[in-house]
Image (cartoon, rainbow, N blue to C red; front, side):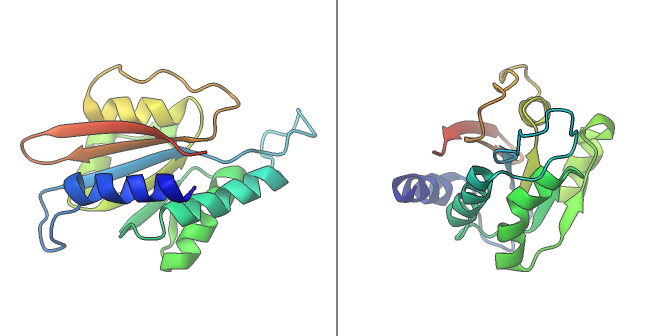
Length: 167
C-alpha cells in the first residue's frame, strides 16, 4: 500500500492541488465500496466483510494526506462503512447522494474548487467519472473489483483523468 500512497501523493502534487485560496481547480476522487459481506445473496444492503473492513482502513491510509473538502456516499452500509474511517480522520460529515438522480452539472457547481471523495458502486462510479469528463471512457467495473481509484481534475482550461489500481 505504501508505494501506491507515495505514487498518489507525487501525482497529486503535480496536478491536483493548487493553493487553497484558488477556486479554479476541482478534484474528484471516485472509488467503489470495499468488499461486501456476500453470505446472504438476497440482502440488498449488506455490511462490509472482514476483508472489506481492512480495505476501508487501506483507503483511509491512501487518503491520509489528501486535503479533502467533502465526502459523498450512497445510502448503503457498504459505501458509508468504506469512507467512515476517512470521514472520522478529517472530521468531515458524509453527505449522501443518489446516483440515479444526480444532476452532474449541479453537483459540479456545488463542488467547484473543492477536493471531493465520492464512493459508489461498480456501475455508478465509472458512470460518474464519465459524466465529469463528458466521455464514455470507463466501463462498468467487474463485481469483484474494489481497488480502482478514479481521479478527475477539472480546471478552467483542462480536464485530466486517471485511473489507478490500489491493492
